[in-house]
Length: 363
Ligand code: ADP
Image 1 (tube, rainbow, N blue to C red):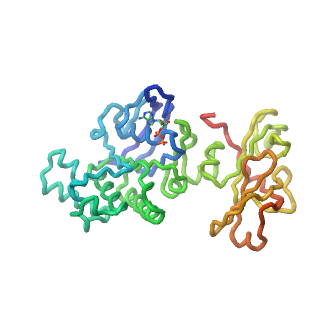
Image 2 (cartoon, rainbow, N blue to C red; image 1 turned 120 degrees about the vertical axis):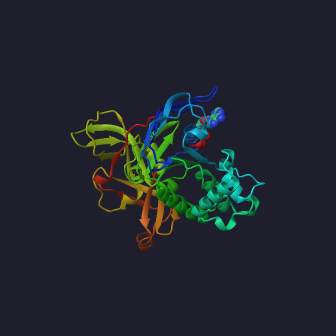
Image 3 (cartoon, protein in one colour; image 1 turned 120 degrees about the horizontal axis):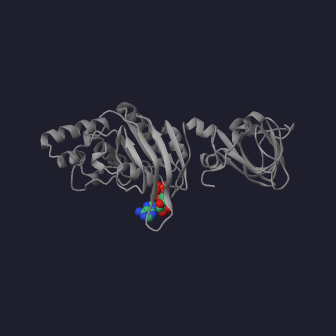
């Protein structure tokens, strides 16, 4: 089948007696995109995926695949295929028959469907284990069988619900690379649900960050990381400091704002009004230890915790009115002048590294 764009138009899901699990979500996923739905547990990722798959009814709105509105179509008639977290393989069938199952349902004869299943097994490098049963396969191997089984229906979109969550860290990275290779090779869209920002950044062309049933931001990984739109995105993606205060002076292209405990900062912003709340983000690795503070872009932090991350060392600090503040130093820089818990450290950052955030959609 030809790759097709998928579009969600004002999609809402309300479960009986509950608030909206997915709240008026609109999203376009161009054909051939690796899309990750990213967010904390309960934000509506799986519900969104299941509505795209047709395993969940839609309360309001529409889903379109290419030019077809698929909102009320059964799963098998949509051009989508789903790979479940549990893999859901039939224990009594061998690998080949597991993969060929949907073709059997369609009435294809045994020789033809087993031949097609073998092609799919080659695609996922599992042809040598074609005769094993699921219990004789490792977790990673079972997952590849599940992938082959989903792909045999020749879908326009493959839907994956937390596909890597059951794998150990090494296998996770290996399977991640295989998923990306498959997606590029097939040229169809993959929509992959995850709560791992690392996974989403490694895989996705389009990261959709969800919170409370809504989309906080949908953009490339680099855009989401470097220009998070909201404090939620900045915190969820990690490696950002968020400062939250009120505007005290508003100029044409810069403002001054104050934290509750009186620390004062500057930010590049226009159109702000004195008294309005404001949030800014600064990347952890853009914060420098400096004796010469940059006006409006500095504070003194008290070292609370030091974590060695290999190439980097992460230093958590406290300051009055600041929720969390951290600094990331290259390993060699840190060890040339090590810090210790309890040290008071003068910190500065460049005005161009200050990024002004918007209020959250769910605020
Ligand atoms: P996520 O995949 O991001 O963890 P879900 O889509 O599973 O989130 O859930 C979103 C919200 O909908 C949660 O509050 C969850 O409790 C609720 N929910 C999910 N499935 C059901 C269901 N079958 N019945 C009632 N509420 C549900």
